[in-house]
Every structure is written in structure tokens, then in C-alpha cells.
Image (cartoon, rainbow, N blue to C red):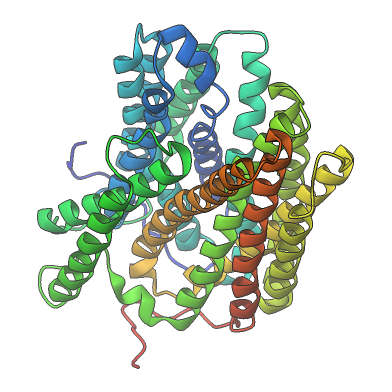
Length: 489
């Protein structure tokens, strides 16, 4: 990534409406983000096939997902610095180049080692893209219409991961696992070429200090937590080290990370500007958003297990049954964005959290006799509630920040989204595993034990959702702040 001066097209906040070139720029960035984020969950159904084809264990195969998450945990916290130091065009070309290179490596990988390398390189590009899209949208879009724009961005955040397993199931039902990458590669390359032609710069890069100790602490902190939680949730009994070790190391490193960021605030500048948390609306919105993501990712991992192990449906059918939920989110997100622009967050967020909570409690009642259409309806209710949450909360959180903190706010949202995903997976799978073992020890049949485990996991999700309902009552509409302003408490 070079740092040579480039022609910058100055941005002014005067127009009340987006120009055609601005809309095209945001549209290209959103599509690019959809391509890279969709890839994040596409491997979930491919692991059994990879274990057979590459003669690897489940614990080894799981590194294709865990390694991806770890790189994301390292890259995303640094995106605030990256967006200050480099131009939009430089960042976009670097991110899509990394993603395309990683996809090509994975597609031709002869064995596990190169396949893992491909996933790691992919993650390097993926981690930058979502904060880049959110920051660009917040910079270009007038405050009066940010909701509808963030509604479109919400499709990327919520729908792309949700349809990854569905597309994966469709591809694997007819083709080898390599086609998961071969299908994406030409799309990624075409997007890179179009972006190299069309993406322009909207901000002026400035000299920023990269604090290496902060980068190391964030890597150990966020990486340790995500690795520990992923090991606890997805590779129980197979992890190379006990999950509590990386979790403890992660918590300790994050405590040092926070201390160092505060110390750097009055000096050369922090890696991640934690002043965003002095904005009440940002903090409250983020807390509700994180609890929502715990429910989303927990349900994403648990529902296919329920459908396959309790109802006995195939992999492809299980993937197709969670598709309506993803479609519902895609349809609702832009509508919710328009409603946000008109009414603000409160009338949307509280009903949304209630819908999510209701869906999780309803899912806690499913068993082998529950009709599959009813299970699909419960999932659609869950994703519809989440669609009602995500757009207003992201927009409300970022809109109350001064423009110079947009990049850091986006980075923090992206980082905590990854943590919430790992935590949701760990919580649901751990409760499922422990309850199932307990029921088997008590003499229950495998089917009854698994059903009880799934119900218990959703009960815990329902309990967490009640916290989100309570927090949603604190969300309120506030006006954007000028650059550099930090509220005094």
C-alpha cells in the first residue's frame, strides 16, 4: 500500500441529497462488502467435505473458520488508523486485492496449509471493508437520509452471513468445495477492476501514528477472546489449549489496551479512540446491538443442528430453511431505514427487541414434533426483529459522533460484532453440549437429549434478549455533533 499523494475531491456537507456519483460510489462499496462478508460464513457447511477430501480432523478443519476470525480481530481494530492514514481509493484497492488473492489461493490449494493461508489473506481484506463502507456512508450521506442508506448497509451485515450457508449447501450439493471460491473469484476481480476505475477519494489522508504496543495488545486481547470463545463453542474437547487460557489472556490484554489508549489520547493519538464511549447514544446503541448479534449468530449455528439432528433433514434442505429469514432481513432493512429517518430509533428498537425476545422464547419450545413451517416462521420472526434493530442502532450510534470519530466508531462496531458472534456461538453450543451430556447420563435417548440441549440453549438466548429489551428503553434520538466535540460528563 503506497502513500504517495493523490488527487482528493473535497467533500462539503452542503447538499441535502446525494449526487449520482455519491450514490454510485456507496453502491459499489456496499456490493464489494457483500461479496467479502458473505464469504465469512460460506465454509460452515463445507467442513465435513474438507475433512474427507484433505484427510484432516474436525479440530484442524475448524481453523479455517477460527483463523479467519482471528485475522479479522487483528485487522478491524486498526481500521480507524488506516482510514486516517490512507485514502479511500488506496484502502479499497488494497482490501479487494487481498481478498481476491486469498480467494485465488484457496481455490487452487492442494492441501490444508495453503487453504488456510488463502482464508487468512481473505480475512485481511474483509476486516477493512465493512468499517470503510460505514465511514464513507456517514461522511457522504446527509443526516436526514442516513437511515435508508444504513438500511442497505445492514443487508450486508446481517443477510450476507445468513445466506452463506445456504449458497454453500447449493454449491456442495453438485460441485466440489473449490467452487465455493471459484464462483466468488471472478466477481471479486470484476469488483476490484471497477473500483480501481470508479472509486475516488473523499477525504485527505493525514499523518497518523501507529502505536505498535497498542496493535499487539489489541491482537492478543480481541484475538484471545475470539479464539477462546470459538474453541469453547465450536471445538469443545478438541482445542489445543483450554479455552479459559486465551479468554483470560484476552481480558488482561484488553485491560492494558484500554489503559494505553487513554494514556495516548493526550499525546501521539490512540490506535482506537475510546472517546466514542463518552457519547451516551453510541454506548447504549452498541450494547443493544451486541446483544442482538449474540442472538443472531447463536441461532445461525443452532438451527441447522436442530434441523439436521432432530428433524433429520439434509444439509441442503437445512440451508434452504434458514433462507427465508435472510430474505426477510433483506426486504425489511431498507424499509426500516426510511422509518428511522422519519421517526427516529425509539419506535423501532423497542418493538424489535421484543420480537427478537419472543422468537428466542418460541424457539426454546421446539422439539421433534414441531412442524417445520412453524420453525421457519419462528426464525423469520427472529430475523425480522433483528432487521428492526440493526439499522436504527448503527445509524443512531454513528450519527451522534463527530465526523473525525466515524472511522473509530465503525471499527469498534465491527470488532464487537465479531466478539458477539463468537460469544453467541460459544454460549449456545456450550449449553447444548453440556445439557445433552447431562441428559444422556440420566438415561435419555440421543434424540431427547439433543432436543433438551437445544431448548436450553434458546432459553439462555431468551434471557439475554430480556436485557436488550430493557436497554432499548434507553435509546433516544440525538443530533450529530460537530467535529472534535466530546461531551463532558
